[in-house]
Picture: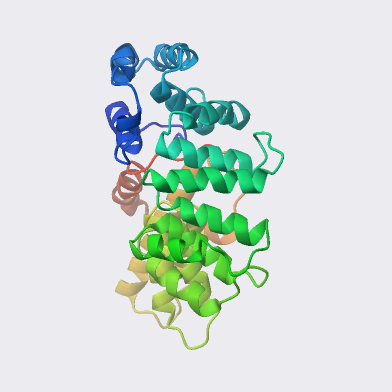
Length: 329
């Protein structure tokens, strides 16, 4: 059963997402009202599935100073929307230009470009913080966490001025903020507070595959944690589309099958293991050689189960669009 990692979400949903992304933070107040009018043909091209025409329209109007076109073009270049090829350098050029129009997320992305030294600056770290501060002013509160990470990791400022604001953003259920805090608190050379790292990890895990997986690994390394709890969080991560969790979940279920396991329960474990192996294989079609235990699971799973389980795999994969670069949603 095959699966293309470049499969796109609904085109209309993509357009709506970008507009919401831009304007929910107030960008429309600072943009020209005719920006969207100019991009009408681009929207129509996207709705009809003509990516090439849409991309060309965004390029044309971005060059003419349309801030919405500049930001959207930058986002497409960053994500490889047109052809699956990411172009961060070109994306940053357009993010920097869109930031001049005070597009909120454009300001945040410009900060990333400076932080990562893709865009030139005499003092990239301080320049990045300036853009993050502007992004906060226009409603992107999680940019406080980007500023915090620069202060701690690049400027070695501790206590960091943006810590309180980042904590506030995390407290508003912003997973992006929570995961930055997890990294900083868990790092002995950064904020170094394992209790706070675990606190935010517990909050992020139900909503983020990456954090659910990390939480499962944390529980797995602890004493006296029931295996059932570990499997629960591995599978939660897998259900959220986090690729590294697929085989961990499959292996965990398969390891539960022992001579003492009753037949009905063993069947459940085997079916679960098969399901997550197949999901992993579908997203790793290029992998030809697999571990022996995977072959054993596939051999032991009755052929009569395959159709129903493969259907569940397809339903799971249909929920996500996976990045060609990371393999993650």
